[in-house]
Length: 427
Ligand code: FDA
Ligand code: NAD
Image (cartoon, rainbow, N blue to C red; front, top):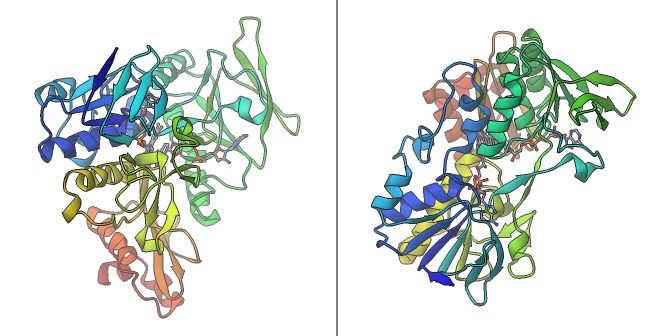
């Protein structure tokens, strides 16, 4: 049993959706392209799952957030794929791949062969078990990576109004879910090992602003601590979280966001790996010329950082690497190396921030940390390498992005601090 396609996209997430749009724009013929996804729905904008999807009033639901609405582009519904002759093989896990033979084998035993493969398998959420804590399969312990997780989280949340939630992890998932839980009138305690939230990106000063804001919404923080076990009731539900210092926190539900691992497993030993991902060149091509990798699973050279290999776990990178790979496949002669400006963002409560570039070097904060109109620049060797801004306008964000993209020169950091956002607007 088997099927053959010219192009196969393995994975049906954000990158797959944007790759499909690019294929369609560049004129893929009917029957040439197929997307294989373990998920049962067509590609969608994953960021919606920790934002609009969790709202107590008028929550976002499919089909409203299929890709590529997140970039103000066409909404690719199942009907769109049909009209474009793109095969969606949904609810199907690929269990092995052979890049020499150019074949994939699905969990149901079907062989799908390709001429060109795009790996867009994204990542999976790390489990508490991987840190030696048992019991995270209890029905009121929630992770958040896909639509099924989000549905479960919503169902558990609805039984906990007025109750206690413990959020494990102070990264993106922890912060966005804590805000959603508080908005759903659930009492939230966040626990994480670092001294402040969002430690991979925020400075202590930036984190201080968000932590104070969260506290004003009733969220409690326990920092520099980790959980050691979950305490269950007689029905197997978690009723408390036990921390390393012995603290016992009663819990009606637990949300876990302790990081991810890229889904590289099918290709280990077949393709070059780096930084926990599949290594690609600036055209998103792996060590096998018929295989490309995009999105969270790809480790690619960032020209702005001297072609240092980075694996980024953000939606903008998934969208742009996917589109670039398709351009490189369909128009190889006119497509050079991707020149990508890393871009991260988040929205919580009524707050909203954006970050561009790299958070290395010296930090210069500016603005008013009480009113929520503030930002920061990272400078290295006399130029701007990173920029963060809370509550900016489109024009403001474009200005800080430009300051990073063109490595605006900084003569005097005191002046940078006092001119603040104006520096980018004038640069
Ligand atoms: P993605 O994870 O989207 O898709 C991977 C796909 O591959 C899935 O459909 C999966 O089922 C499938 N797959 C994997 N292995 C398979 C196999 N063996 N067989 C078949 N299918 C397989 N970023 C940001 O910049 N701003 C934001 O606000 C957010 N918000 C956000 C919220 C939440 C809840 C999450 C989980 C993530 C974010 N992100 C984000 C991160 C962003 O969503 C992420 O970077 C992209 O989804 C990555 O896109 P990919 O297509 O690479 O992976
Ligand atoms: P993360 O890497 O952002 O944060 C992980 C957090 O868990 C950190 O605070 C870390 O210290 C903590 N942690 C690690 N081990 C722990 C342990 N044993 N006990 C307690 N805490 C522990 O990862 P995440 O928040 O799980 O997010 C998952 C992925 O989803 C990331 O790729 C992220 O980029 C993506 N995402 C992005 C956004 C956004 O960009 N706005 C939003 C949601 C999710």
